[in-house]
Length: 237
Length: 229
Image (tube, rainbow over all chains, first blue to last red; front, side, top):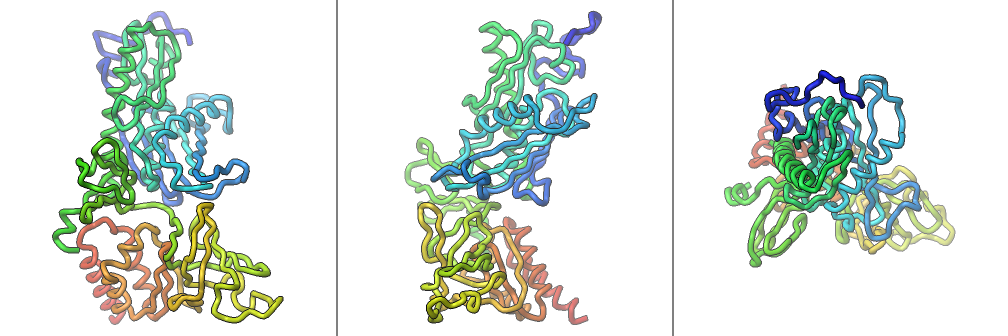
């Protein structure tokens, strides 16, 4: 998207919404928000609002997807028609199929699949409002929902994006920054450590910038990881 | 709950370190990485002797040999019954596992028909998760009438309590006949079914709270008075 010529994304070291360069947007996480799903979570990262629900482990249909001796994870990411400014045409499209797969791959390394032979863990992520970073928010919501469902996991997966706007590396892009920025780098991290389970890059970064951006995104993931644990504990207090 | 338990149980989330050191053994709901033991599920971490384990706060029922379950007959075939046991895996009750003698080519629905409730034992669970039930057990029986409520399967031990304290208290106060299946189904019959249902719902909701027995006891006393008034 072309940036209007007079638009400045960084003014006096502060971003458009008043954040510092290495500051994430306000995060709100709540576990167990749905009554019908076995596990669920609601996540707000700035203007991005995501809800995730888990069904199962339950039987796999169609049967040919079933795996002997282990469970499978199925993810469906979708955006509500009212989640963006113009109406989003409902139903699956190229982008949501890709994101479903990304979320699945980001979460798969932490789940103990062998405890549920021949079953399926069905995860549904619904974007209610989009303001950049929906895949990161989806992963955050999904891993809290899975933990809430009592699914055995090695650890929680946290996710946060870093990016480049006006030549500077910044943490957690919002809508305008994502649209007019130079690069977007979503990162998912296992257990708040440096074990990365998702790394994508849209845009251009040189080696030094990439290292810096990854470091910054990982630090954002740590903040989110603490909030995820807190949200799960709050459910039982 | 005694004082020791209070100090012992701690709410943990997946990936949280419970203990460190090779003196401890890995129990249910935990895993070892290096010399530390971590939680796999959200639940209450406890140690019993050297074994560290986590009691999960949510989850499905996974059939285990030796469990007792409350099941509903879902299909009658010529040599067995299919039983729905509140688990992703269906269970089978073969004719060889019922008390009565079955005549050749008899209609099996004269013993159990679709929709009947049974309290049955689990005799075997294969690696492929084929579950076989038995009625040839002193505790197993067909359930007539009454009412069935569901609780989270992982909370069944809490509903029963230590050596059955909790469930006996409910039976005592509500004068209901109650059978608890390991699969999270509770069957009851009696005049104060509603009071028992509410008490069970209370346990389901507050299973992680310390001093639950007192809370339930108080609730039952109060409910008893309201009913009399």
